[in-house]
Length: 133
View (cartoon, rainbow, N blue to C red):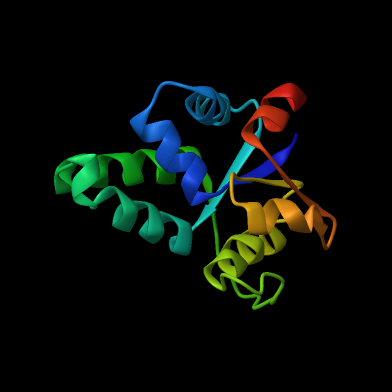
């Protein structure tokens, strides 16, 4: 079964709009692929959803994070690989994929997509991930 990390930008998009990101997240919840996440991604997701533009209260945010924890394998990230030069936070997503033995990282982040592949893990778009399912 495909093992995939959904980057925070994909998760936020899945939460706020009914589009391709949400379709992909649903497939993960339905066990069509193994959904991987980490404490870093969960904390970043909560932080982003707290922004005023999303108009979410703390209870809603916690419910979303809890649902993700229940649907995903939470990877214990120990690696500290340095692949992304422009945004070191992206390295945490890469490390999640590496330590979780992911096949792909699904992202809309150009820095990650430009890497294409690292340590056997491919960075792909949401559209490409849906094609693979």
